[in-house]
Length: 467
Image (tube, rainbow, N blue to C red; front, top):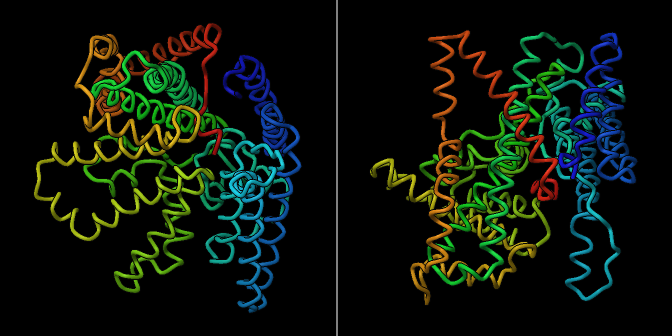
């Protein structure tokens, strides 16, 4: 898709940077807006009007709500918040859920394609209106500035979800420096390496093990496959988030972290504080807490948690697997709130991490049953293989795949922990010049290797572009 295009990497981005930095400060947002629309047009130009309509609609509603609040008309403002939520959810429903729903009822679908990044930019636009109503941010008066916020290309199609209050100041005035640019380029190079060198390779192994027959029917083959899928989705999405954060820093924006080493979690609760942090925070701030959170008793808390996780599953897609995935994590989180967290606190950290990883991997299997690699029935069979039901531990082919991929697994496992960043921080404190040289060398090396891979490989999916 977008990042599989060498034209984007080696033509669009440099031209955007040149235009941005030679433009006076007053016009930099306009350069970003035009660049973002061009970027989005690479993916699907016919949906540019839809994104602009969402932007202008929420911009206008934000102004109306601010005016109602200033006039003391709280009920009218609350009604407009409901209108905002209804309109944005309607847009999501039409493009994400209507055709699957029609197909389910044996009605001819409309054939609507999914606009890239629609879940991300509608959530960002909604969060702005909600924050205006909650008086956590002032209404933006300039429609072009607001459209720049919604369409900002570094994080447009796959997040992180950036609340308006987090970048409101930077949209007006932001700092630029060689140091920030160098740091941004380093982050971008790290993210690109995660995506191209780790996620893509892991995805190819997962596809082979999930759909092939060479290691079909063994416990080791099944576990190996889902581990590779877990690494694929982590390095795919965290890689994109690093690239977005790096590009944002180059342009003077500081985007929030979206991942904090989720696979070292000691519980499912901790996992969701480390995985896709901005989405978790969005549902917490705008769904779970407004429903009452845990303030109205335990029974209501579990109902609120159930609603939140059903919506979280549905956010990812209309497939039954995503609803089951939401229910699965709701069940685990509810059990942890009820008694498991207390029990886990008495166990060694290694046991807790193994517990979390076991259930995280089972969750990824449910997530993967989206009809591309696996159907739900295939997933049930696959889970049986993982648990050793009616199948051998290994065969020659599964052992070969295991030994062949051990170095790759080791690299991905180390990369999913804080060890590399701790090493770089220590090197930076003890030998700052050497650390800068090492970071620069690794960045250049990563870019060169990724360029070679992109030029040679035809396999370059971005999983979260679908959402």
